[in-house]
Image (cartoon, rainbow, N blue to C red; front, side, top):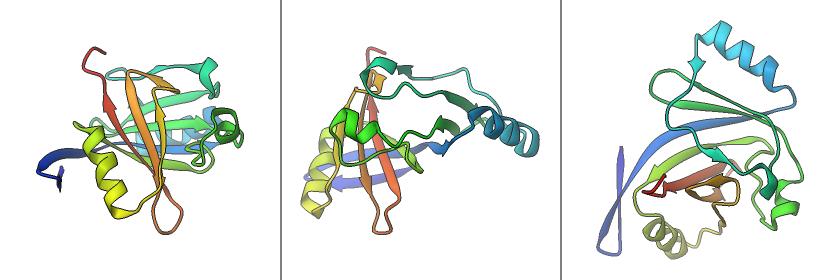
Length: 147
């Protein structure tokens, strides 16, 4: 767990999942189950909003601590949703926070551009996506307390 200080507020960040984008979800699912012994994840799964911009297949696996989201590659998500960052082009790593507003302010203060997806793809998860200096996509999300 990492704590970041931003404007007199501590926000918690924890690694939540790794997302791999693929043209063949079932092939990748079999690989991670058979080779790395990952199990199907049943706990804490997002409620997907397929009609809001990303209708692709996703397999949810876990090592018992970290989730793995194996998502169907979709190069059009950014165009359909009007966002610059496409989280299912090459995949991404994702962190969960307890204060998405403070984290957005932190990114603003650091001059980091981001795409605020809100809950476009996942009901009850406020998601933002941005790039690291090498172009890797990072997600930070906060779960709505009601979900």
